[in-house]
Every structure is written in structure tokens, then in C-alpha cells.
Picture 1 (tube, rainbow, N blue to C red):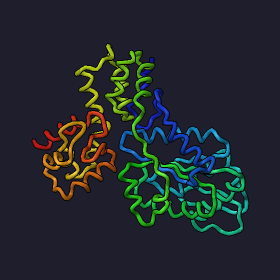
Picture 2: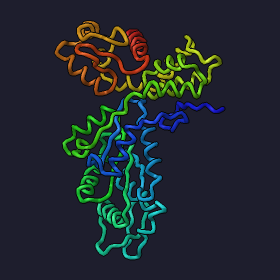
Picture 3: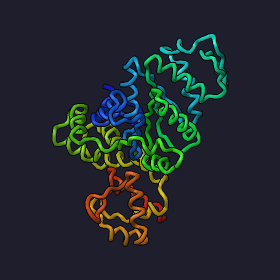
Picture 4: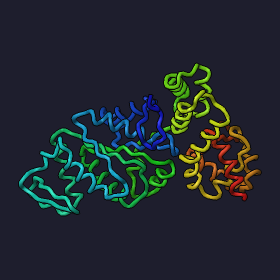
Length: 350
């Protein structure tokens, strides 16, 4: 039997756990117009399952005849990408092949009905969207890992104008917490500030346990123990499941835990750590346990200035690395992250 778990980023796993609340919110928002929003952004820590969720919703919307789904690369010219992909969509290409007007840019050209000459890509895209509106169809733009780039800034202005003009264009994007926060702080990107944010948080532990029980033939107690080791972290769920599937006895032992730590580090935590500032790292060095770390202890252990504590605490909470469970106490959000921090603390001291 093929391993039902995957370590490949963004790939839809066989043992996919549906997040019904997110699915319902996005689909009802776009299809039924609930929440009066054309834009949803899925945020969360690295490895939380944002891209998988995006791909699942992409597949769902592609099932509807009146929805045209376009995936664009934020590192490229987004407006040109949308226009070219709309034109190449087999189901709607016939709408644009008219003898009235010829348009060409950067290697691709086509004819578009319209008496007024088109001078730029923005005007072209608006004309295409008006034709799509006449045909009673809707366009869903997907952007994975959106960030504050020039391409996103240019796209945002055209997108905002088209939404304001009542054109049937919608946006579903994913982004790391810190990148979305940076976008919100851009004064010119008001559509991001107004967009509905959905945090892709922890998976349900009972659902993880049931998945492990089904795929690995484990008993109830063992399934729950394995699920608790993931702490609901989507990437950890796949990593641990894959390791258990490949093991002979399918038991949690020192060897398997060591492999689990190594893969969490390689796939997620090294990159997460590299993105932190020196002070962020000092703050995390102050944790003395996985849970229930008092503010005073973190300040003393990390040697962080007391007046700066709140600022760095809030930054790490926004990043999804720590959480505040009760007044004065913090805990780490990700499985085996405490062990990783302790190893890094030793490495950085050498």
C-alpha cells in the first residue's frame, strides 16, 4: 500500500483532514455573498496547511461551470498573467476571439471585441472582465504566499477598481502572518486591510487520531497519544504519520522521535528560525518549558529589557509561534519546538 501521508509541500495528501468551518466560510462568502467580501486571506504559521487548503478550495470552485479559477504567481506580472490565463481558458476563449480589435503584449496576442483602442493591460483586463460579466460568470484569483511586492501593489489597485465597478472578480490568497501584517500596514493596499482574514490554525486532535487509527491500524489509546504529539500542527500530522507508516512496530520510541525532530527541523523550523530577528530568538531562549512560562521568568532568562517585552511577545504571537493562555503566562504553539529551541541555543553558543 502506498504511504497515505506526504512530506511534499502543498500537495493534497490522501489523509486530508477537512477544515469544515473554513470551507463553509469561503464558499458561502463567495457563492452566496455572505459577509459582503470579495477577498479572503488564509493566514497562519509556516506548515499550518494554508496551501493545501487553497488547493482544496481551488478544486471545489473548478467544479462549478460559472466560476473561472486562475492561479497566479505573485513574483510575476499578475495583471498580464490573469489576462493571458483568461484568454487560454478553453471554456471562455470563444468570447474573446472577435475580428474587431487586435492586442499584443510580451509575446502573446489576441483579438478582442471593442471599438475603443486598448492602450494598456489594465484596460484590456477590464474589457475582458466586462465580457465575462455579460456571460454571467465569475473569476476567482488564487495567490499563494502573498507578500508586499511591487507586483502585488500594482495588481491591488486594478483589483480594487474592478471590485468597486461591480465586476465579478474575487481573490483568495494565503500568506504568513507576518507578511499579511506587513501588507495591512501599506497605506496604498486598503483592500488587504478590509479583506476577511481566516487563521488556519490547529487541526482537531480527535480527527487526527481517527485518521491515524484508520491509516495505521492503531488502537484508540495509541492513536490519541500520536495525535497529541502533533499538537494539531498540520505539517507534524503528515510527518509523524509518514514515519509511523514506515516503521515496523508503529510505536513512539526514541529513534522515531529523533527522526520526527529532524524532519520538523528540516521542513519547517529552520526556515521559521531564520526569519526571526536576534531579539525574537533571545525571547524564545527564555522559555524554560513547553508550556506555562511566566513573563518574569522569560525576561530574566532571555535578558530582554522589561520595557521591550510586550512588543516582542506580541510579534511572536502574531507570527503564530507562541500564545498567551492566561494572564502573565505564555506557551509555544508548535510540537517539539521547545526541544528545537534548546538545540539552537546550544548551537548558537558554540
